[in-house]
Length: 237
Image (cartoon, rainbow, N blue to C red; front, side):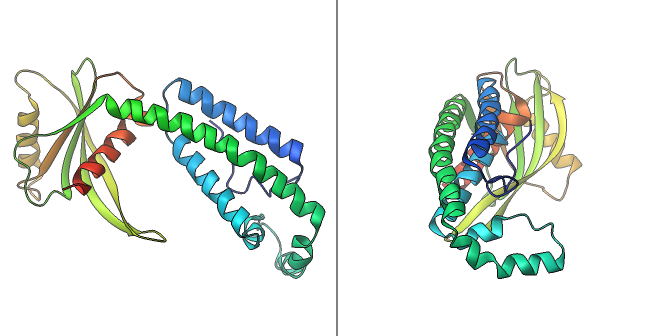
């Protein structure tokens, strides 16, 4: 699906009707994906675009940074020299402000729809430990499965820390290991034992199962929801 460019607000023609068409066409594509319960990357993109517009509205100087930079050095210097004149141009700024005022509630409404779908999906997923969870749980394995619960996708995970503008945040890096068949012989516990034998750098790994009660788009929805569930669980420890 074609996304909305990061600099969609300032790229090309700065005209309210044109930008309205661009935005609504994008939101229509997002709504179609939400109708298929495909959450990502659309939900995170919506959040990005909304926060970007919020920052631009609160600091007009950032609008200059949002303009395309595919210019020659001479043209770039000229753009920088003319920037003050541009932001004092009432016609240009009023058009940008009108576009932002229209776009922000539209993005909010789509974010709300996506968040409601996310909450519903999360409510249909259960996270449970496989075996005893060691004290060190920032690295281990995550099993993801859904009806009819015959196939299990195995991932290795590692918690990472990063700093945003206000606080330290947790992220999750994952590496796909394999897809394996779940059976009376090959139980989740047996899968864990097999991983310990194969990957001896994790002799006592934290291992978690995320089980969905519904069949969902796997990469677009179930995997990102499972990852957030695991981060939330480990953050609460």
